[in-house]
Image (cartoon, rainbow, N blue to C red; front, side, top):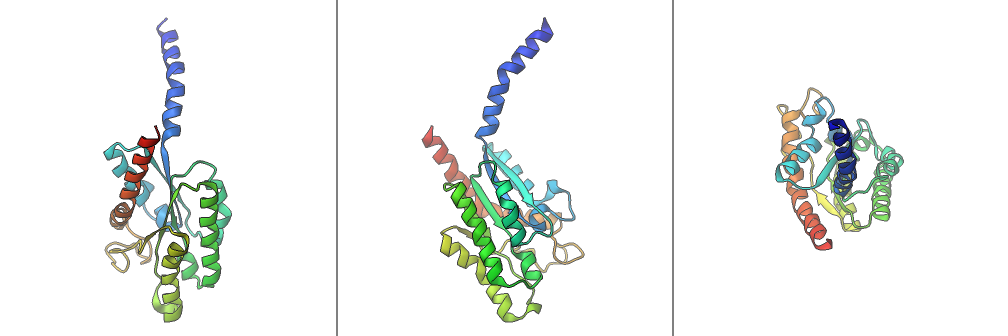
Length: 216
């Protein structure tokens, strides 16, 4: 009898649990090895730290880490449709760094990032898009370096999306906050990145929560 009651309760609550899961708004962090947390435990990568912030506030958002080490903007175009199969409320675009390190033509990179933005806006017009600025080492020449840096604000202005000026603010160039390769942040570096991202993300999530409240 007790077993029957347990099964009955589970069956009764299952649809409610599914509904609660479905009601979560997804924050999709779409990027390369920085987002993926290369070289550290993924639980210490900045998307996971953002989720901890969200959970501590009791907000109904799910931070999804869609980072892939080695990903280029072209790879992102090929992969994004798969990642957009589930609804997205906030899309954080962190790509282009590997293009820059490889010296890929920036017109091609810019076109690829634009394609990704277009796909998100087409499928989820109410989603907020954040594009994270990145910088490359000066060894590729001042013209390439400056053009790369300006690519992100140009895309933000063109598409009226939110710009996070430099994802690695306070982290880049500091040997204590980067792994031996000098490129990938340590766990401590990711803590600083999480702070930078949270400063931009928090007001957006507040706005989303208000919109959800008014729509009920």
